[in-house]
Amino acid sequence: MKKLIFILFVSLSLIQCNSDDTLDCGTVLCVGPEFLFEFIDADTGENILEGAFDNGAPDGFVITIGDDNTPLTFEQDYGFTSGQLSTFRFTEQFQISLENVFDVQIAFDIEAVSDGGCCQDYNYENVTVTNATFTQVQDNTTLILRIFI
Image 1 (cartoon, rainbow, N blue to C red):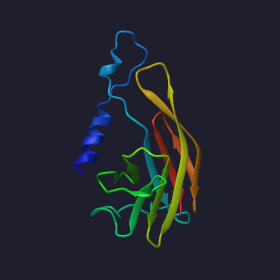
Image 2: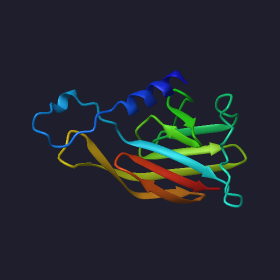
Image 3: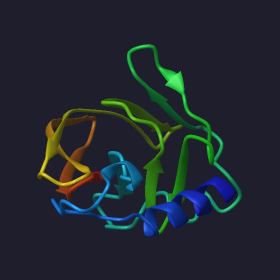
Image 4: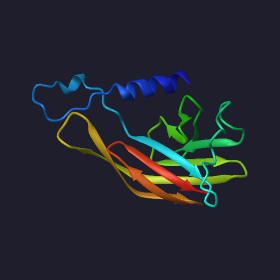
């Protein structure tokens, strides 16, 4: 939890910049790509994971990344706040499952783009979610998927 609070603090204190010639971009802390997932019951509209992380990761909950299915660790590699699962690891492929509830694979392409400022933005394309339907929201750095189970 301390790591999550630290990350949130750092995220809130980031400096956004534009192409100001007097700014030294070497002193600017830029946020990398972020991934947020919501798991919604398709029938009721309720967040399936709400309350499930009150005492740590629920039994039977697993996130793996990459082709080698590297497992992630709660609070070290991912967290859960405000109804959203957030990951702190960069990857273009996630396998997320909660035993006897859902098992989805998420894949996408990511491209770093520059607006001429110090920090990069990111475009997320070719997003797929197997075993579920989804809607996608994206801002300059964050990919948010609302996944319907």
